[in-house]
Image (cartoon, rainbow, N blue to C red):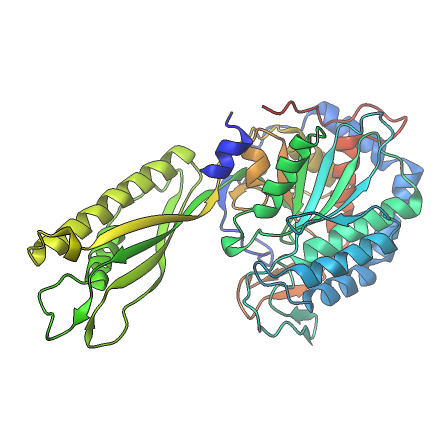
Length: 454
C-alpha cells in the first residue's frame, strides 16, 4: 500500500451524477451482507435511544431541508469556501460542539468523543463545502412545485445538511458511542481542489498520532447507491512555448498553437479500455496574442480518469509521448535546428486523485448495507466514482460515499434540482451506519477495525 506522502505527490429519478462506473448493479451479484453486520445493526436499530434518534430525523425533515437551502445560498466556489465554512462552524457550535474548529486547510472539524480511552475506532463523517460553480454564480434557491432549483443544491449542500442532522439527532438523544466521530465539512472536493481537504485531514491525523480508522462521505442523494471504489484522475496543464512573431514578417517560425493542435489531434485518436473504464478529454485551450501573430504560447487542460491506477498511468505515458511527438513534428515542419526558435513543452500536474478499490465486504460497505436493510431499503448499486473517499480507499482505510436522501438531477449544471422525496432516509441510514461502525456503549463490538497507518 502506498504511503500518504506518495499518494499526495503523485432507476428512480437520477441522483447527482458522480461520474460512476458500476462495480455491481444487481442484488443477486452482491455477496451476502455479513451476519455480524446484520446482527449488530438490527440490535442497534432496536435500541430505544436509536429509535428516538431516527424519529427525530423524521420529525426534523423540513428543518434539514431548510438547512440545505440556507447552505446552498452561501456561495462556495473552488478555493473560496470560507464564508460557508464560517457558517458551518456556527452551526456545529450551536449544536453543542464547542471545540469545533477550522483547520489550516479550511476544513471545519467537530469531534464527538466516544467512551473508549483512545477514541478508537475513529470515524470521519464528511461532506464537502465547495461547489463547482465559479464566483458570481446565482445560487438563490427557486422552488417550482416539489422541486428546488439552484447550483449545488445537491452537490453537496444536501450532504452538509444531512451530516448536521445526524449530529443533531445524536446529541438530542445523548447516544454514547464507543469510538470518536469526526464531523467534517471539508474543502477542495470539486474541480482543481484536488481533494486538498481530505488530504490535509488524513495527513494531520497521522502527524498528530490520532489516526482515522474509517471514512464516510455524504455526497449525492440516493440512499440505494454506495460508492466503494475510487475512480482516479490525473489532470495536467500542458504549456507550449515558442519564439512568436508577426504572421507575415516572421513566417517560417513554429507556432505554439499549431503544436498544441497537433497534440490535441493525436490525443483525440487514443483508444482506451471500456473495462476498467478509462477516459480522457482536452477540456480547455488558450493561447496566442492576436489573429495576426504566430503564437508564442498556448496551453491545454487535460483530464484523464480510470478505475485502474495502472491504466491511468499507462494512459499518461501514452499522452506524454504523443505530445512530445507533436512538438517534434511542428519543429520539423519549419526545419527548426536552433533551440532558440524551437517549440518546447512543459507538463504541470494540477490534479491527482488516486484510484483504488476495496472488497464489496469492506466494513463500511457492510455496515451501510446492513443499515439500509434494517430500514427495509435495498441497495441497488455499488459503484466506483471520484469522491472524497478516493484518498482513504487508496490508503487502505475502509471508506464509502453514501447519499444524503431525496432525489434530483443536473449536478454541475445551472439547472441542478432537488426534491425531498423520503429525504429523511438519507440521514437515518447514515446514522445507523455510523453507529454500527463506531459502536454504541454497552451494545456489542464496533464493526470498524483499527487501522495501522504505514
